[in-house]
Image (cartoon, rainbow, N blue to C red):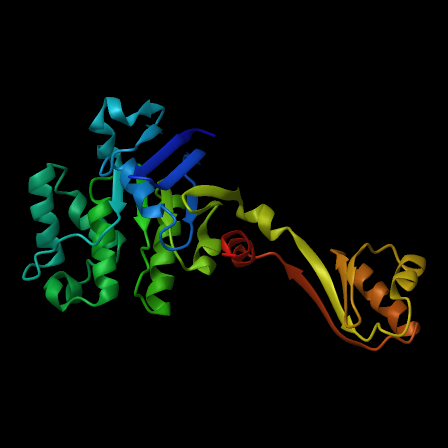
Length: 302
């Protein structure tokens, strides 16, 4: 699959403090890449380096296989939502984008198309001044600013920040639509891990400026196991499992038996064997690894 963004040995230091130190990250065409980390981990600085707003101390950034220091024309292919745009509060959203169009010179026909895409084209919204916008509408307008140039890449830094659950859901659905239907490559950071887990194809987690994890969401979701809660303190439950079933024990305590993942039929056979051996069983549940589990394990401070 074509690589759209490639970061190699990318480092940013301020005095003696290194805020970003990334060996290698690639973002593929058409994917949603979740870029995660605690506050101060270097996420926003990395995005600003991609946009040439911050100069790297060392390393290279390539966009569509071209190093960005050689040519800034690549910025025409990137839309970004790093910080909230400066709006003219006494103008409508359409009028704000028209001012933006006169500055950058993109096709003015893009404006109504993008306003429709982000849900701001309805009559009730079209005539509303930005000063009267809700927070969710302002986030949609910020997305419109990022999209109106018709970019191929979208950089989004906390796009759902401050939104209520309904607003978060709306922005999430829009981001997925942009990637899957419009073909955009999206590089997104967020502190709402469950949202990234819903929409991302791959995630990278950074801590203290370094990449500590990278993986595909679907592979992460496939890491499952079975937990059986009961009273296992009086007998050798491992002997029962190995003699009566084909299950693999991952761990066992007086109150919990953890097995490698099994099919439903095999789970029922394990439970039947345990009940027949007079083990009291009070819970059977299939568990899966979550993005939050991985994030907390890798970013926990000693």
